[in-house]
Length: 115
Image 1 (cartoon, rainbow, N blue to C red):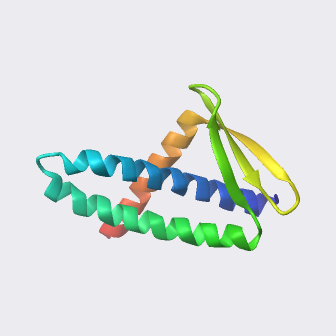
Image 2 (image 1 turned 90 degrees about the vertical axis):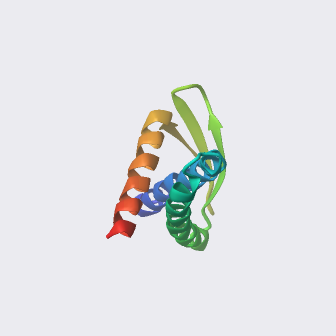
């Protein structure tokens, strides 16, 4: 993978994790007393992130790059297995860094949609 493909894959990974997290949070928020206030915000955020996610995925598919799996090593690190046209690649990520980047990306998308 060249640096541009790696950057695109990293963006895709963050978006993938954001979508999964928001989908899990959705069921929790549905049970809140103020769910009618929060659900439209969450739906809009999920829609916007999903659009970016599918766009990134399409670009990766063109380069024959796909996510195989994410394997949690321990509480601090996870390995991300990537299939490419040439060979498979395993990248190690710090879990806390991933969480922070997912939150940062979500905030950025919320701020853009509020403008």
